[in-house]
Image (cartoon, rainbow, N blue to C red):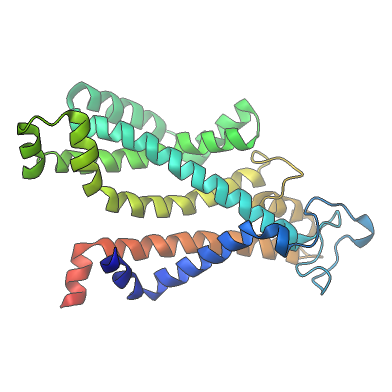
Length: 281
């Protein structure tokens, strides 16, 4: 862990991403303290007011405080991204480990048929169809994005397990009578965590962007809950008269996605032995 932290210090972009993510996380957790207005409170006499001391990010077409809505929108985006990546990783880890460890019929069914069936359609299109069929809600949104995102993790785990199960220490443990479950959990899984962590960090960025896209289309968390995508959708009709309505939620989405991408790139460089070797030279 200390070696990893030392490597991360050598990558300022990763540090910048970590700082941005920390700011978003703190803002989301402290939203009730930082936002003095209710994000769903309608105040028509003060609609479409530009940024001021009373409303730092201005007000929208219903008089709601944009600053409060951006903060509470961070809660939704980070919660959805965390849930989607966690569920996708668990599902992909289980199916990928089975396919890579046992091979044969299990590998054919999971990797050839099941994975290709989900890859036949673009992930966002599959999520749109799923949410449109079941109805927009937070649970359906998380489930839809999970179903469209587990394949990448499964294929990564499959490739790593297929390579790792042939290593000498795994064969030695097998010869000593270790069960398949013990081999996977104690000997293989701890040695394939590094690429999974990198993939999860990058997957968080994709999940934030996908949640904003579905909310923009009206298929995400429904009003009056504040989400960045819904804010962008509501601001379309006021683009020229009140551009700040788009600027602030768009900047929040961009910076949040950027933070995860920077962290993912930094982790990839820090955990890559070839990168450490080049730096040592």
